[in-house]
Amino acid sequence: MKIASRGSTMAVDWEQRIDFPQLRRQRLEKAQASLRDSPLGAVLLFDQNNIRYVTSTHIGEWARDKNARFALLPRG
Image (cartoon, rainbow, N blue to C red; front, side, top):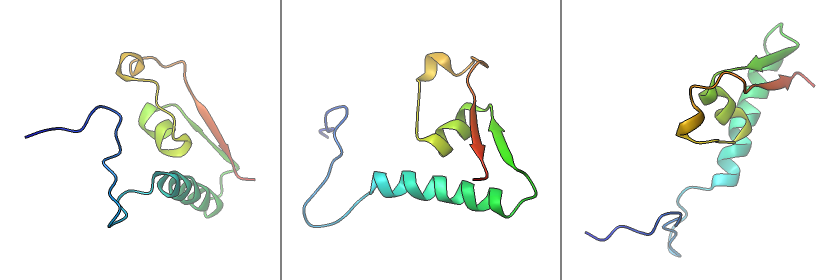
């Protein structure tokens, strides 16, 4: 079985697979909607998985044990 090269999207012209820009936008919109529905004014994220979900950033496995990274999601 031949595997596509690292970094390829494996896109095809006959169907839409994953729309990554839409996925990123929807994740942020869901987090913002949850924040609007809560009494909180902001959320401070420390967990790498939560930061990645909301900001669509990833710094690699080597840094997953570092607690010096955070993201602030304000209500407005």
